[in-house]
Length: 549
Image (cartoon, rainbow, N blue to C red; front, side):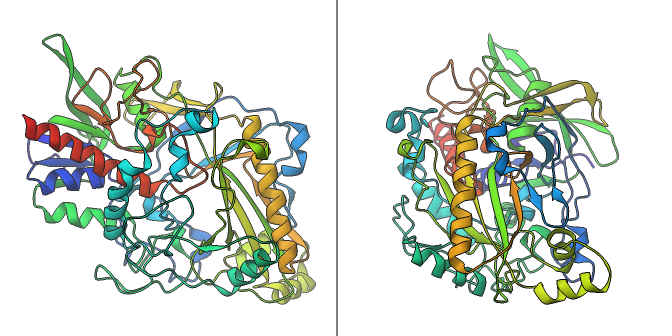
């Protein structure tokens, strides 16, 4: 299906946390906006499997997967052999001497990857914006925490974020819209363990309703966020910003519209983005024009689209890629914890979130109790127990519900071996080169993973947990949920792709409004809230310029 018009005031490519807030803001001011999404529109009441008997086997119902390839594999540093992923049922999960590429966890659909995110809604630590000036590492953002604070407030109100009165490193001018969720029984056990060690466990700030809000009920604590929320109580973009955008009457949304190229023209000696080429669900090619174009396809697909459109600022598009530094440890507790009840991560340890080179690595991190893989009997049987037959079944019945786990996510620093480029040998169904991801961990990430693993085990031991049954780490697997940095934002024209207004350098009517613009990844915070705040800010700056004429 083609668009209704041949030209719009603004085209927005991607309907996730980077595209939808931008589209809504412009449409709310009377601009005509066309938002193009490569994936389908999901129906929360019909699309998800959480009410089906085999829900645990199905996962999120991805119907349209973006194709990509991977680059060179990193040789594993044997000094960190203790970080190898394993579980009791299978032993070591990577028996090679190289890091394996498992998955880039991206979802195509109206709402983007928030469709299966776990609801976390974090502001970045205020010091994370000044890594170079404060700690002598990485780079500074061209903006600061204060620039985003009003947009954080606005996004939290739209999503319905539940959170505590205070979160360390994140001063607030307004309270969270909703009261925080109470800790689950399993997280309460971890909280007691943290207390023994002099560590504070704070309620997590999440876009999951703790009371009725925006015509949706409060969470029922099924812990199934990654399967897709069938009740609309999780603040994914499809049930928050999308309805606001459509309500304006000036925002048109095309699903299954696959953009392959941005058309660039020279006008008066200047480069201008004039429109995009896309394929509809039937495979028919179309062109649509736009006075402004915002790209919000994520930190892998955004550089791919720009490079396929022959847009590369200073050779930096796709460089400075940052992935997810992650570790999780699962143990069996003598008490039945039922860790699968609740929300995925209802508590956070922020103690080590502020960057601190004295730890032996500069980046920040955060730890959290989590149900992890212990969500149902299938995962228990496949991961935590070995053997077969009647004794095997009895052992599972005896220990089901006893798993308890602590995980952590941390800073990732850009390096020369980690980037996104085009694969010259592989093309998608429309003939365009696909993205090729290559990612290597540096020494800071390895040291951080070691720290997270050690602290997680100490907390589990203090909780009374006995046998460790699984350890999962990004040491030996690329399994990225949070990705950043491939179109870095900055004030220096030589080292950035977009400026502080998120305009692509040399093409003033082309913007990037997703996590591609992050100069640094932060200390393990979930990025969607910051993406939404940046998107709203970029829209306001554009509107301000338009008002000036």
